Length: 463
Image (cartoon, rainbow, N blue to C red; front, side, top):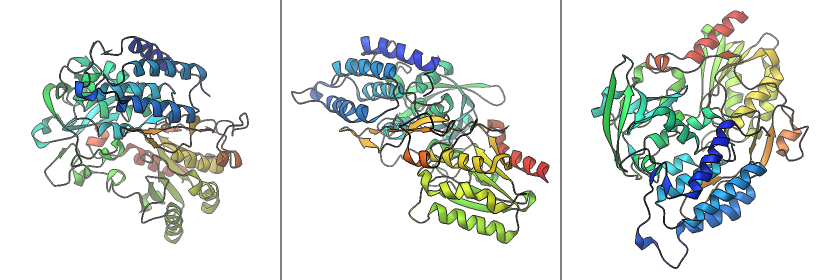
């Protein structure tokens, strides 16, 4: 397994410091639980720690021996204060302990975490290492497009590093979950980045260079305020239940096809200008109404019926699922197109897990006829996965990773790999794009899709 990064080494050092003085997180006193929470019975925090140690830590295999020892030390420090910490301080520290595994599948679910705590009424989405406002309530519409630069005086660099300490995996993948922290004064306050737990002062640099500063109040969590996956925030129709509830940077009428209809898991369209069909595959799972393999077979049949030579496969918001559902199809698909047919596969840091597997089965089978375009996917060529989620007594959703995936050497050097990738190995040099075409805030605001535009250029050159 890849050695821990310098960033993760810094995280370990910070974990030690936090463990030695856990009630002083980020330099300010962490809120403590009320006296009524204390009793002779184990607190929910103590119950969570017991379950975490007995079930999660024994199940997860991603920790290196050094990281596991550090996690145990941090967990012991957390246990010494269990029952005396605020929920936010406790959950965030447990998130950091999980993140020491430096593995994207080893997780304390950030979306479920966000549902426990308050949230201001803006929505931030990462573009590169920056975070921009794509949604607001109408009264804050002047913030749309703004780049977050500070919260309560803390610069984005410090905030980003703190957010990355709460999730495992590549830096870009960690950034997918950072808005769940930035949008919550309650969580920021627990980490020492907000003075108050119910509000914070946000600073933005606008596209025209103006600097805007705004005090934003947070709303408490509740079922009427669902937490939408950040990848779906590119779709300007998804968050507001009623017209007018939210203002969006991108008007619905300007949205490119690739980000629209966020509620649809599988879509395809004819693209005669590229002599292709475009297939948007947002999960590697069957849904209640559609099987993924049925969808792919239908899209391929339509390509044949239309006489199109090429396929553009958009995996940019595909967070994964079950790799076995599409394993054989992807490996055989290049033969269906014939020697002149080309594939362009679009990826991004949201492309994760079985979406990476499917992409690489296709790439391995098609070789130079499959061109990867976009951004680095959300994981490395070697990672750990294959663990069922478990719920703690207080409702935390934890995901252990039990089995190795090695897509660089086809698991030839290991005996602990996932059985499906041992039987059908992947061995490639890279999962990264051969042609970079990242989403940028400028392209998004203008309604342009850099990935699809790059795909058109690739297929034009191939003619």
